[in-house]
Length: 110
Image (cartoon, rainbow, N blue to C red; front, side, top):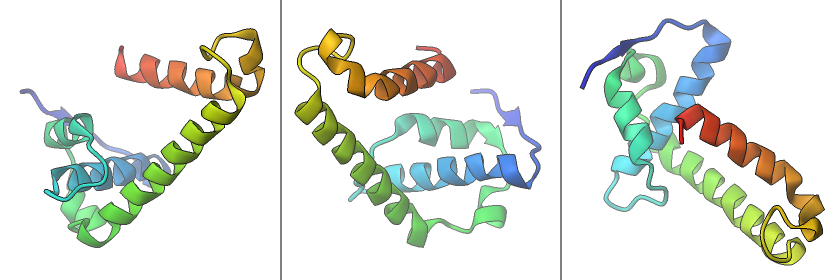
């Protein structure tokens, strides 16, 4: 697997903070968030994660629980407000979710 060198300023570097904590949590045997892509990316990116962000043990599970709360709320919203598929006429309230899914798909190349 080839590595990728990354050099970012302080603001864009915060993206790597989130990625790091997702990967740390995904490696835990008692994980609440499974994210093999985060693990793979952290392994490939040439960046001093531990030096910049610490070992991640204290914050990684908090970050994962926060993500799980967002996921649970999105599922609740879809269940309560979307009849059928997300592209159905009844799902007008959920269009922001559809946009986010498309953005994520574009980023991951799916």
